[in-house]
Length: 146
Image (cartoon, rainbow, N blue to C red; front, side, top):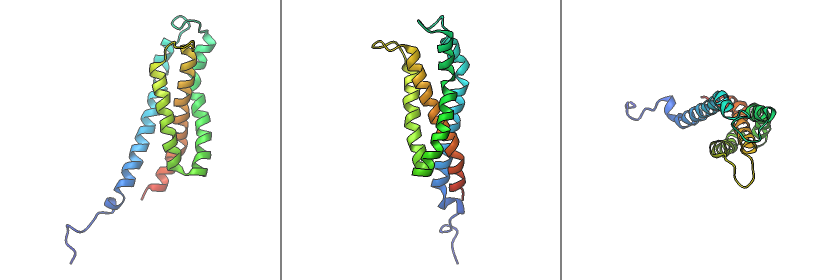
C-alpha cells in the first residue's frame, strides 16, 4: 500500500511550469498596466512648456509611442513565437522592456541628444516589449497549462 508521504499531487509534477507561467503572466500584466497608466503622468511632464524645444506634435508622439510600439510588438511577437517558440520570444522581449524602462527613467539631455528623442525611443521599446508579451503570453499559458 502506498504511503501518503510518497504520493505526489498532480500539481507537484507541474509546479515549475505553473510558477513560470504565473510569473510571466503577472510580469507582462504589470508591465503594460504600469506603462499605459503612466501616460497621463508623463504627459504632464512632456508638455512643450516643460521640455525645451518640444512642440505639441512631438510631445504627442512621445506619449503615443507606447501604443505604437505595442502594435508593432504584437506583430513581431507572433513571428518570433512561430519561428523560435513562445518561451524564447518572451525571454527576448523582457530585456528589451528593461532597456526601455531604464532609458525612460534616466532620460536627460546628454551629448546633444534631446530628452524628447530619448523618451520616444525608450517608450517605443517599452511598448514593443508589452506588445510581444500580449501576443505570446496567452498562447504560452494555453500550452503549459496541465
